[in-house]
Image (cartoon, rainbow, N blue to C red):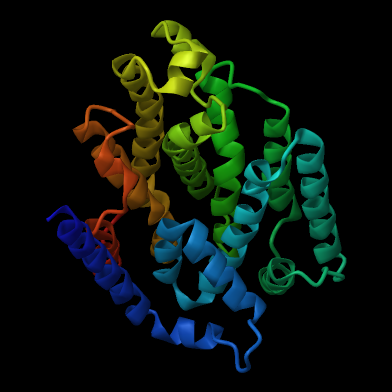
Length: 317
């Protein structure tokens, strides 16, 4: 019976996701290679679909003029973000990040390496005149994290979230030719909310790698030891700590939403990930911030429907 329910849920999710992909058929058709060889654009699309599915759905719902830019930027961010989990030690991680730092320099010198993400990002950078320092900021933040064993405070986690998520939104706004300080302000808060939420979602994965992402000041507040988090003990106290961290994400999300009147209509779709953030935080609240709860370990069939409906009805994020 359980397997039937799981299969039914998976089928529902697939149908909802396919609805969005069908809606964006012109994009997917353009991305298909004309030969057996995969194009850089198609490679980026597949990379985002595999490793960042929620943002993949959001990217498909963007206007035609910015979709390919979103997929290239997010593919680059995935490559940089995955360095930490792929590297066996700090030295190797630093070397891989140095490769991407050099790659960005080569992109802006019009000599990108024969890497599909680099080639597609080069095309996007030339087309939209994207700022180099935002791409570099994503790399620097990940590089600093390699040598940072823990987050000493909630503020340090918040700063990391800002540096690993907000630049993506700044780049998407540039790709949409939108330059306004209040829109950037909204993007900054959304990036912080997104980055903090990503870290919450990674707590269990990082614990398996014997890494702690719950800030030390929050752990001290709730008398949590490192071993308790790594072994999944004291689940109530861990839930209390997760509540504190998620409250900060919710605060930034609400601030971003309070500024939505400053966001022009053509940029509203860029802020669609606010829906995915709010959706996860609400699911987390309903299980009393128990990150071990089984309902949080799988995709929701409702999210693609909500995203599609928001886009279709041009509803605010």
